[in-house]
Image (cartoon, rainbow over all chains, first blue to last red; front, side):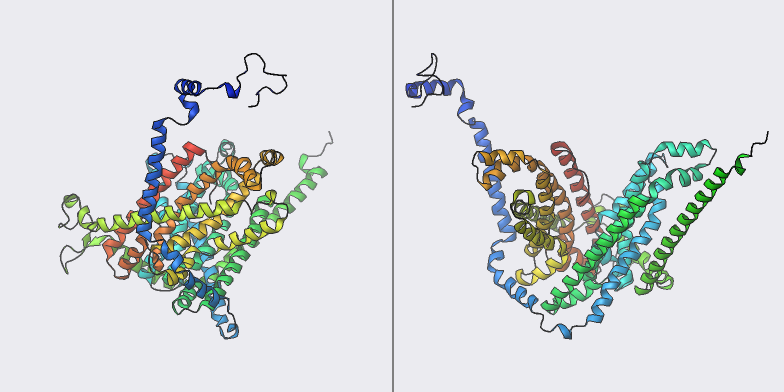
Length: 296
Length: 311
């Protein structure tokens, strides 16, 4: 009933009044401008089709995974949570063993990452475009890095446990192999983005190829490499906590024992220990990295 | 002409002294850091029994094991031969050294790989939904008091700090052996990881749109729905795709603790020393992981633009 023109007294010439619109007008407009009255039938059919497909997919997933069990088994989750929060036996737990395993975990991560970094430096140079111009060689190197990186550390750990037996050595090797892939790729990228002018400057003094790498590229990329290695140590100590679950030493081994005998209180304690250790290493490594970036 | 030779100029000498001093200090610092790193290295090696003798003893065994992974016995008890040979490459599954013989259980693997990818999809959707809902209360700029934001942030932090394999191992007890425990574990971890990234995006979003909706009387939900979501959704989707890649990797290994997918099968064949199947499954995992990485990278670049950065 209202006018669409706000400030005019009475309908301005040419204004359409709502009550003057007849069904015939609507039909005519609908015929003339179908898009203004909702999506065309084809779009609507498409939407319905996608909706039905999603519904079907959801039903399929339900058949595949049986989501109902999430709700029917919730009481069992509460049982665990209650047991986890009961720390009345705290004094009887084998703290010395747990702390030793925790240190072992960090040692595994440090050793594996450092070894990987040492190997990754030459590999990174070999995989960089501005060092080795051969395209085929670089392709092969990059695929090798991808192969090391593509399989998760836990898979490598499982394989190395079979190869060298239970214990931290398998864990160190797993971290080493997976990390060579990661670090070599990162190092190669760092070397590729290094400034050309410094290399040219060194070459202009008559230096050979090795000297050009040593004085032209290395000073540019070394801080990046150290920073990335530190970051990897940090991330690997997080990863190393689970390697023990497949027998590769460290705190994960203790955790898996406790889970298997349903000692939920100790499980919770170990998780807290892991969280604290990881947070500690995160902070130390972050501080070191910031210092590195600032102080050069 | 009684000018000094440049090297006898006092300012030159001063420069030399200062420069030399700085250089020496720098060298000492570098040496000290290297020494500390080396010392830690030795301590870590002692702690993990990583002695040269042990490693030397282990290396041949590693070579032997990897050799076994890629070799096959042509007949029972016969000497092993490489798992593939040119002459037999494309022959049927009865012929050793052919691809079909190596991958003779490919139909089982494919079903499991499919299940693994479905696990990753469900977990990503679960994590995305939960993180979407939780990211707004976790955004300090959207709330008057910081208390709720801090609380939600702590919850998200715990969710992403517990290693997901550990979580899966624990959840296998209440939910039984199978993919459900794995999905829940990855989903919870994704919630924590995505929730943090989402709330950071929210905090960086332009608040003028939110204020606009508030000024016309929109509720808190409406402010977020019309003021915030349109700005941050592309970023959310990009992060979710990145997360999906990570989750595909995770779902391949989550089965090691009995939480479903191809990992469960891999652990079985490694346990039973079915060597050629170990290498076959590892290769399949590698292929699927790399394929999904490439695919998702392409989608992200095309539709959303690269947000950059690794998780």
